[in-house]
Image (cartoon, rainbow, N blue to C red):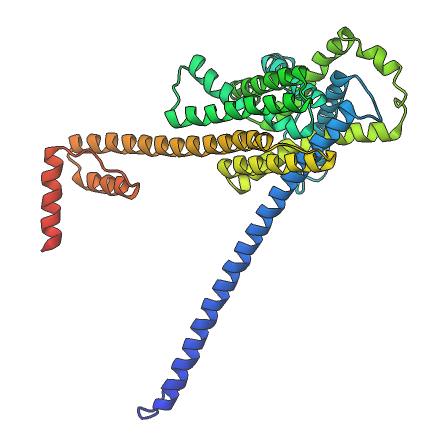
Length: 410
């Protein structure tokens, strides 16, 4: 490499400018890559959240049409729910087949009927049947605008069952949030009655749906280990059991004769809508999980609350209803209370997680102190400090820390 003469300062200046421009170019390139990555991530989140909203809202309106549409007039809610479960089973089998044909594109766990696992999942399936049946019956008898308020007591039941079943207490802030939700529910029922649109049986089904949703979440945690904690396998067994459980219910409640006299039984439009409702019911489970994955459980719950607001407004506009200020206030109380409860519980869980980390770290500090390894004690004390927690120091540890401070000051 040619050496520059000592007096050639212009060459050195040019070299430094080239180096600086190269450095600046590298920084700009890194910034552009980061911006593109952030843009890609933001776009992905927006698409997933939008998909969740579209699928969820469309599914509610589609089910409302099938359950109580003036054009169909099909009095067979159990059969509709049965068919949706059947579609879910067929979709599981189809996805498994596609995962074997194109494994690089689609991934789906092996699904085959195991009678032992089916029996283990059966208690959850009974609750699952109750949940989706009461949900659909509530939607059949109440309007879409009142549907959110009608099923708003899930959080309240969650707190009650947590206390009586799991023997766990709830914080005062969370209880206040529940009281806000209850007040919104009561006010909503009152306003529906004042408007002459109250369906008592619909409200009863809504309360039942809230209870079964809560029971379903508790039972799911209990049963998941039976299917190796695989949600898709649980979906498969749950829906197979549900299909079997619905058959006697359809016969007992006389829906077989209703179907025999149904004029649209051979209509391709009817079966297309039925199949589409089953596909949407299956898809909402996947998209819900995906939304939690790309955002967070807290963001998912906030998104669900915002979606419920949008769904209510769309329903009111679609039906050309005129609602009172108190009716809107009832919705605001229910949704605001639910969102506040989610935030409170999220903060409490974070605090519990930090406290458990601190307790574990302090246990290790105590063990190291007993073993005389003060270097490890220093490392773990620093770790606790980074968590924003203050360890409980013994007098010996305080003396040791003062010695370290003195050494550092010298």
